[in-house]
Image (tube, rainbow, N blue to C red; front, side, top):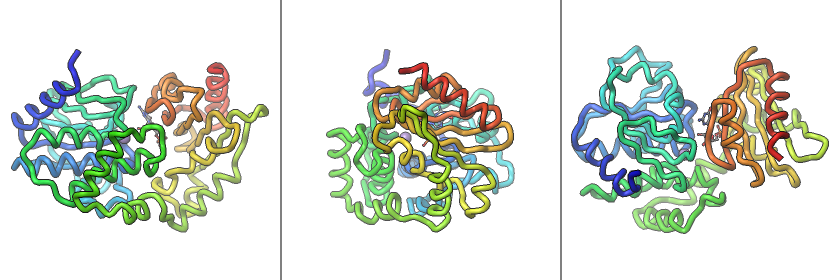
Length: 325
Ligand code: 5GP
Ligand code: MN
């Protein structure tokens, strides 16, 4: 078993030995995914390496101010590209999380896997996995220490973004002393904390308020009050003019109801597929729950995709939750 320090060193070797990298994060990228993508890009540019950053879909509007975030290729808008041999995956709990971007990996591609999900199965040739890190960005802060680089506000802002968003604004249980120490160092590099909190966490769009309203009016609870869930359909999305990033945070309302142990947000994808986002108040390991359906994540925040009609999926998931008490 490699130690974390050995894994970081192996990652450094990977960066020094190869060139022409494809940097990729998970589908429907969150703040940590985007921040980790551009952080690795920034490091590669410091090392004089060539690279392409890519995601299966669109980068959320509120994160586009990050260094080179606009350069992240959105696969759905870009003509097909050539394949790459050296891949760096960030914040991807399993290989499937890279989504359609995998079509740009050579069959014999080498993967550097940098992640903080406890359910990560080590799919890379080199794996830097620290499951008690609050964010992949926290791991990247350690990683950057191994290189002779000059820190600036851009890179500090990027790493701070991953920490801020994955800790829910430095509130969740993953807000360790180290997270606060790293945040402090980043503020010393000129990060504008209040601006980032406002832009990334506080500000809402009108479609976001409308879709939240729809979601909350669909609220249902089990009789014992321990499980609460909401549902959003493609029709709701259209009626509200909402896009995926507008759904961020909705699931928290279900879990935050006093007495609720598990909160679930069901997003209908089509007639035969539903995405479930799960949050736990502490008693139930939702990562394990999501894993039983082929998903994953963290003990208190996880997700999965289920095949089937909404009613079937809800029943299946509630049954599984009820078997966990
Ligand atoms: P969210 O519910 O906000 O989409 O995701 C919560 C957590 O679960 C995140 O850490 C995310 O990476 C993880 N997660 C969400 N959906 C999936 C999934 O389908 N598969 C895996 N492995 N992890 C997921
Ligand atoms: Mn993350």
